[in-house]
Image (cartoon, rainbow, N blue to C red; front, side):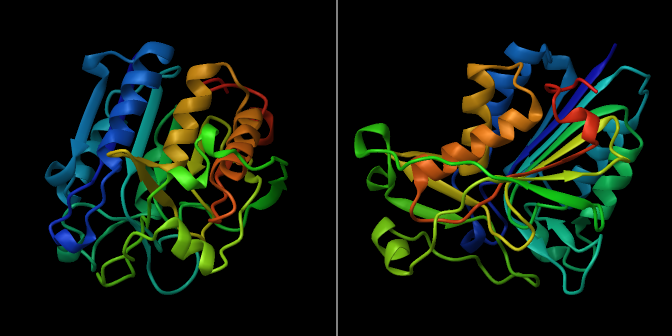
Length: 290
């Protein structure tokens, strides 16, 4: 059995006004705390593309590498943390992974359709997109079921909203305008953003040997937060936390726990609903089991 993992994190964009602060740390934590110790991915199994190495051309080359010399039973992981965007229109092909040089590639960006073609060529695979508009990355009109969860608000001692000084959306409007400035907790509270709860699971029967994880619904933005000089994607932080606590969590349970975590730790203050797309028979199985 051979494993391959491609991990991408883009803090620094060619247009510095678009830059983020958490994606590289997100990808590094996911590798060091999850893929390597819990699922046995070794140094020779992993390619990382961080900051100016994650260009459009380099990402396409690395995606091709994922498909080379694959055999039944091989495991593949593709993880992206950075900005996302949406092309005008509807349907597959409009969700965009924003690479370091996205401003030079608005006419030929890496889209959900391109990523889906790669995933279709793989066997057992898990794909993670910690970026905006990632809910239905690469598939059209699946039957969807929202998984509702409940959770109370965290106290300040537990790291509730009072300890989070900054909030930024991982979103670039199509064409390259910079994303919003970080918002203070007070500012976002004044704007009246409601706390989101739950997670969305899309039962997509063609995904018998794959699972796709999104940071938020297509119409939502994904957030990164910071405290004490540390920055992290909300989705990635929840993912790593719950997997390190129990790497054998069934996918459905993991989604429910992430929904609870978002509501309890960060609400009221933001709306972000993590998503999972896979075949019905996979939701009660853990990572890389199909």
